[in-house]
Amino acid sequence: MNDISVVKTAEDPASKALQVTVPVARVREAENRAVKQYSRRVRLPGFRKGKAPEVMVRKRFSDEIRQMVIQEVIREGWDAAREAEDLKPLRDPAVRNLKFEDGAPVEFELFVEVKPEITLQRFGGFKLTRTLVAVSDDQVAEQIEQLRSRKASWIPVEGQRPELGHRVSGEVASIEGETVHAGKPFVMVLGEGEAIPDLEDQIMRLTPGEVAEADVRFPDDHPDETRRGQTRRVRVTLHEVKRKELPEVDDAFAATIGDFPTVADLKTAIREDLEREAERTADSKVREDLIMQLAEANNLVSPPSLVERVLHGFAHAYEVPAEQFENFATQFRPVAIQQVRRDLVLSAVAEAHGLRATEGDLDARIAEIAESRNSTPAEVYRSLEEAKRLPELERALTEEKVFDFLLNESTVSEEQS
Image 1 (cartoon, one colour):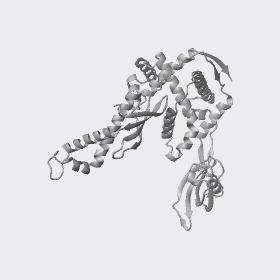
Image 2 (cartoon, rainbow, N blue to C red):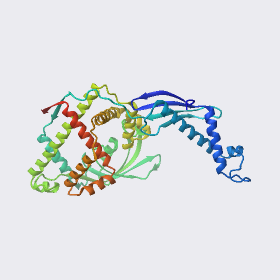
Image 3 (cartoon, one colour):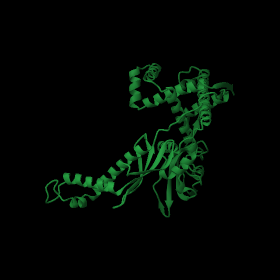
Image 4 (cartoon, rainbow, N blue to C red):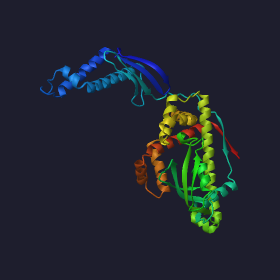
């Protein structure tokens, strides 16, 4: 295939961009093969199957033949590129900027994702500090208030205007000229950002049963860019106002939360949960610091192609519209860079030191989960398989083994704050 030109135009450790040119002679050969295939398969009026003149077949099936030629020359170009660059692709390449004109070579670009070859020269000897933040009484009290809020009752308020923190229901209709559009119902808690400030302000001027018309302006930072700074005429109808009534913090309240005989038992359980969360946060931060030091010591850079793939994954998960992707990518790029760097480090260490989770590791963890759920390993395995979470569990086990290894190779000091 040395008559097919393959020129590398860009690369990073995780991808390559290749400009491929397939000469006219090869294109003609592919076209002749496509015409012969169609000639044998098709039947044209006045001719037996396979006996129609090729010139008629070319004319009648020009689009289909062209598509077949494109597929064949791209396949040949990909084979030539893979051989010329000794590629080990992670998936089929993306084809870009295809140029196919009669009598001219076919040109296209291949974007190929490859497995990064990461070699870590240093993976230990780092100094790390694990900082454990003590749980305060204020944090416990804050959790109690959140539980009170969830258990709150909403009591109707009659004959008075709503205030911040009240829950209101009603309708808002847009007005254009003399036309009043159908009203849209709303239920919201005032002051929690569920409506634009001007609309909340109008609602707070009404008592239940009242109707008012007003101009409302969308703020300059409104999520919908098309509405920023726009003014709309609306008709607001207020149906109902309710205030929140929080329960008393007593033993009866504690019993509604769970199996807690007293408030003291509830507070103890909350404190223990917060302490466990503080432990997880401390572990997470020391691991992040370890990854950062390891990456810097080995001059590890996050390949742009992998960063872009992670960003597109984030955007898909958050259902970000295409027109908002650039702003989203700018905001989340540091997170994506950190994620790629972390994945590369963990994968390189796992490969270099044989730390991938084994089938035995997976079976042991599933047995632990089954015991905690009062279930059987078979039932847990089936539920994980149905939810497609087995790879996730395997990755988690591999990460645990890698971090255990890395932390044992470094010095970790404990600190309380």
